[in-house]
Length: 386
Image 1 (cartoon, rainbow, N blue to C red):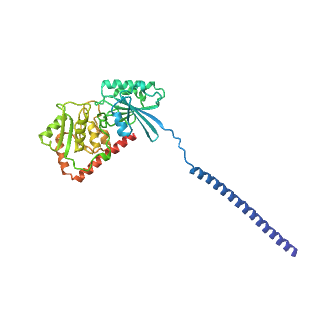
Image 2: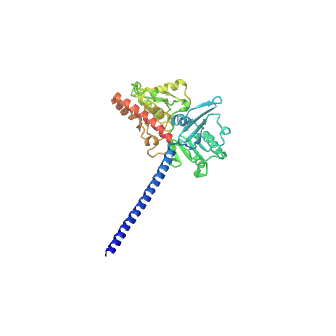
Image 3: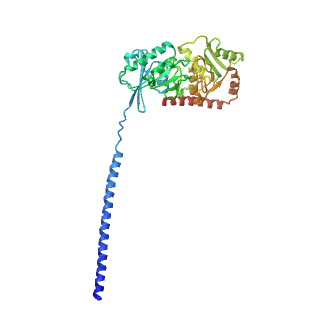
């Protein structure tokens, strides 16, 4: 019995030692495993940290884009929207400029000396600005569009078209990619019914850059001083036109002391330095700018007034031709973007507008001027993103 007890005790102690030994072995294996993983993690983390601390080398290749201007609105696009520099070469026969913007390198060319034989043949991405206002301009524009097929490396083409004031622009359709042509997208001036925001988009007429209307900086415009005139109109007054009716109405009401009128009988394509000075002064001296319809509701005067903080009073009438006639036309782009414009269906309503203007405090007027100027500044930024 005694021997049996001793054996049981011995076996129990042996089992305890075995259990303890096994526990020590497992503990050692566990600690070694943890140390190994910790060292591995520390080394990999250090390697990652080291990699992050090294300067990153961006190898994103800039996309070269050519802008070829064969219409005056190309200068509005280049200088007013993109803010690109411009230099004259070859005795002023050509204007050129280069601009890096985000991932794009723009190269601008325009002028009488810029013809098919002088264009770079390796162009891949192209913005072509053309004029389609009259049959002779359409013919010249088509010559450029046909020439594009000779540029073997061409990948994408965008056209900006100064279209017909009657929106007769169907001649461009065969040149679109969807019809077997080379043009991927087109931006059209005026309320063309072709605009679908897929292949055709709207583009603003902008200011008359070809007449030398400058891109004013904020510091060069006085938005806080009192302006001596309620409104102004500087332009050609055609016989039996809306403009004639407007001028007659103003004179009959004896408002010429409140509204600065500078009339002419014939349209002048180019301003003299003197006439340009008088026109800009008229905008700067007035809080309202009267904009009766001409050949189209959209005219340079609207954008030039906005640029100087003068509110355009626009005749809300669709002119003859094939332009879109359903709302928000006319000037649907400005209406869609809530431009600070006063819309009039007829000029006899001008009395109400002027009465309201005279009720405004000077603080309200200056606040509105700043709002108008800022809206136009943001409008140009939005066009830049297009």
